[in-house]
Length: 203
Image (tube, rainbow, N blue to C red; front, top):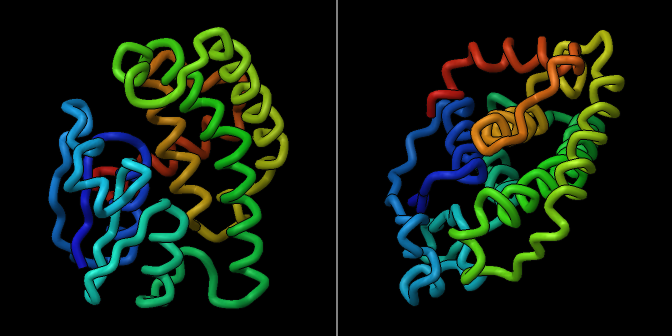
């Protein structure tokens, strides 16, 4: 396998997942700022032009971070980062999807359509007037999630999972692009500090 890697929270999530699994996968850096991901060589790997992309041993390619992580979990079940039972896997997938749709997507597009507009305006459809609303949605859903985190060590209770990795990577990214975590979300703020101590966050 080979991971086509770059800057950004999506590739970081996969690197963090690989580190938590204790795997060693060769990487090739793609220049995201320079637009290499929109050139024919990468579009042949991932026609969506996004990062990261995982090249499999059979020469095919996988994109989409949750799909890549689920594939790696199936190939290397231990340690389980999604779950060991149908119930555990379903719980992790439920929270991962909630976090992705309700927090990561609006946070990311809020950045792309405002602070990141110069980089993205010629690459994707950008809607600058939507940026304030998207940031507001992400902040609102974080407040909701903070309530759900009451009394929990991790998003899935006592289990550290893909859902935690996804939330951590995007909240850390948000703090770098004008959407810092509101410390009033005390449950998430405490959780964030705990996750930041994990070696995999440096991957």
